[in-house]
Amino acid sequence: MKYKVKTNKSEKGITLIALIITIIVLVILAAVTLNSIFGSNIIGLATNGAINYAEEQQKELGMLNDVSDLLGDITGDTDRPMSPSITLSGTKGNNDIYTSNVTVTISINKGLEQTETIKLHYKINGGEEQITEEDVSFEVIEEGTTTIIAWTENEKGNLSNNAETSFTINKSLPSTPTISLNGTEGESGYYITDVGVTINAGDASNVASIKYKVEGANPIEETEATGTTANFDITADGTSTITAYIINNAGLTSEEITQEVNKDATVPSTASIALSGEAGETSIAVTANGEDATSGVASYAFQYSTTNEESGFTTALEVQNTTNSCTYTYQGLASDTTYYLRVVVKDRAGNTLPSTAVPATTKKSGLSDTELASNVGKYVDYTPVSGSFTSQGQYNGSSNKNFSTSTGVKWQILFVEDNILTLISNKAIYSEFNLEGPDGYNNGVLLLNNACKAMYSNSSLGAVARSIKIEDIEKISSFTGNSNKEYIPMYGSYPNIFALEESGAPNGTYGSLGRSEQDSYITGLNNNNISKGKKTYYSYEMSTYYMNSTYLNMFKNSQEYWLASRCIDYGQASMNWFSFCIFYINQGTIFAWPLYDSFTGNDGYGMSVRPVVEIKLSQVNVGLTGDGSSSTPYSIEAK
Image (cartoon, rainbow, N blue to C red; front, side, top):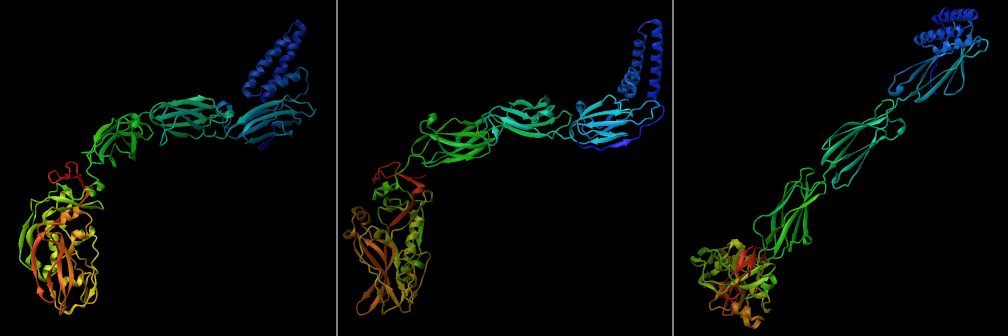
């Protein structure tokens, strides 16, 4: 027990209490005399009247017990001292419980003319007895219940009756309550069922009640529940905020606790899917829409089925998307197949709603790469975009001639590799595409390719035309007779492009330009001596070296036609020289026409053009219709 004590001197002299006692004694003595005369119970009546009067006076003075002690002395307990008085001072809460420290004052009470020494005895919570001859005051600071017993003793050793009081101190705020939730949890912190709420106050010994309220989706006005627990349910979808605190027996309140409850037991309100344009061969684009008023949309699961049975749907992809619209493209579908497409919208709580399935049919697929590769020589209904080309005299070494797209050309499958379909015209076109002299050699490759590109391409199909070249022939030939042997000629003048070629080293260093490569026009003749060069010319009958007669039949033609490829021939007679040639094919035989040589000078010739077209198969469908014959060719169309 923690307390502080202070003492006060008892006041001496005539007091109001002494006066009252004197009056009571006189009344009682008079009653005794009357009782002896009249033989009645007059003493008892007088005594009772005196006592009642004294009690009323003591209520005003707060000293009822002292009067009783005095009466006891008069009726036979001589010289018994008055009981002490105990007063308490502090701040009270509910239930007479103090919420502050309590100051206790114990006072000695004496008679009117009493001068003897009176000792004060007291104990706190049954502890060690304390004795003093003065009033005492001390402060109790510990929480809990404190009991004080006090009595007095006169010089004769007579003891008063005990004065006793008990009080309780509770200064500490109660602990903050806990809130527990009970329900089925979904996703993202949401419950998908009603939520049972339990507020627990903990220590039952000092809890009077729990106060709580709910704001938001499920409002509950402030409610006070007695005891240590409070229970209620959250039944409304949305966000509800619980606030609670404890009130203890003294009326003190705990800190507030808040708990947010998110509930969404309702599926999304809308889920729909619609096609975005026409279905492709292996893909279908869609737009999905969803809405959820409570927790909001969380994702879209895009599903597909070929049966439209509930158990037959497969999820292609679940897209995390919190907006009310989402686009997606189904990929890798089978061509010419009907699919049923739907979307399952999920809200943030995990509730789902599937849309009605929408049917969509993919386009029919064309022939595969493998199928096309096995149909070399088959016809394709390819139509180029009309164009024109002028063979510029300043580059071809001859004269300007104008050409335009021929409408009588058919197209056959030549190669299929690396997802590229290569078509070749079924015949040579034109007959007077002239190349002559050093500039004919300088620019023959570029002129032939540019002419074909201008007149036989089709950008809507991703088709780019060029001239046939020697590499196309070598790809399907078994010929291995070209040795690329190095020579040093006596006569050294040469067309300028020779210095850039892989086969030419007029300055002692070989270039890098291939036989069928050229990006820009080059003109002129260099009269300096050639240091060295490689012979790249050869000729042979194609039938001798071809394993596949289909290719031989395609390359045979009644007209001579250029190949967009250069070659070098080394001539040897009385003198040594280099001839600068362009390859060509005549009736199934490969030749090279010399346009300039360092011994005899210029030469030239006019031949036909044989265009080929390269098309990316990823951009077209081939063979949706037709059988590949000349009369019913395979169709070709953009995807």
